[in-house]
Image (cartoon, rainbow, N blue to C red):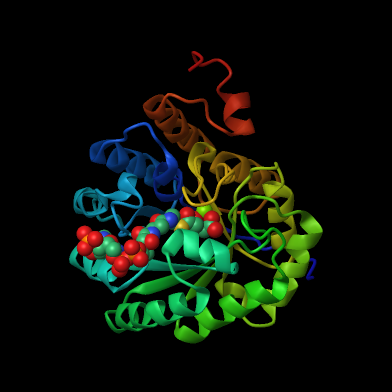
Length: 305
Ligand code: HMG
Ligand code: MG
């Protein structure tokens, strides 16, 4: 562990992808574009806007090409999308996407449930996706899911997470996002996992992605910061969950991460007031209170949903 905290952190806003992929309330393409616009206004510079996956598996993301077609170009802003295979990458290239993500799992069972193949098969599938995307000049993120626990297998050893993170890095992924998909991780387990991954992935290329099912995300993020990680995934209003991870609740709320980082004097470039507007807007669209302590505290004068 290193003790000096990063002075700057990049927040990767995943709410419009990770959040809305799990949402049963209908959200229109225009609403997604408007929400992404509000989040960009708030100062977020990296935002996941959708997934080029099978619409039979995740119907909520079926309009991803239309979302990209409607997004304005904003200087310094990158909108990204998930691409599980070459078909997904082709669709992303046609939509002029500049950053894509492949997503594998440290757990065999979750790999099967989420992308219908084994870990080794997934690596073979990702290889041409990563090499073609790189050849076209795209940035590629590699997700590792179930880094601290699996809904089907329970405990996942740090070595299993490190093995996949290492393979994705060797393949050419520019960044590895470590996903606590079901939010069961606790701080010491997070530290052990990060120690193993830091052996095989350069620190500036590491991101953390915590779901907050058991209320552990901020504590785990603090551990990650103490390990020098400076890229944090979060979702406005604490949206989120994976349809293939039973019991997975929302991602840690962007508002709550921002409050903690502001309090620690860590720069993100994100404005809380503007972010809360986006949080309120998405909550009204899906007709559910934000899963965020900060939104609850600072929106206490707004009419209840
Ligand atoms: P499969 O059924 O094994 O694929 O699914 P297939 O190649 O046999 O194709 C079957 C059908 O799907 C065919 O259509 C293909 O054309 C179509 P048909 O001929 O039957 O009409 N198809 C596609 N359509 C659109 N886009 C594509 C595509 N690929 C095939 N890219 C597949 C394999 C990976 C496609 C499927 O399992 C899938 O779409 N899975 C997506 C699961 C998903 O999106 N999960 C949520 C995201 S991951 C997550 O949330 C975790 C994360 O947040 C990190 C964390 O929290 O840990 C990232
Ligand atoms: Mg996730």
